Image: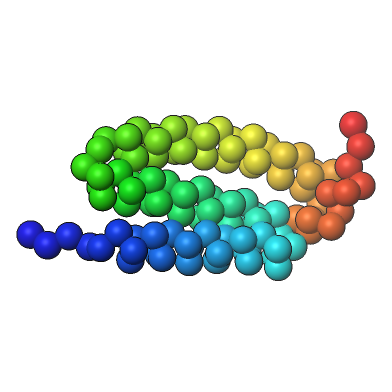
Length: 102
């Protein structure tokens, strides 16, 4: 069984991270911003997995489990904030989030 070179995995993780960063900076819809943030977290997890596989260590997989736990908490809080924003302004436009007080 052949393995994929570490450079390819890191390049893929960098491309995914860049895609998520571009999505955060260009989109105004809060759902798409949350999805872009998830892409960035998964790209970081992929980098840990690739690095762990390169050095034959399970540390990358352990870090990925922590990243998944943080992502789950982030989704729960993020969706609650988006729901509150939608109830108040009847839109998912991120520009209105600067007007939130409370």
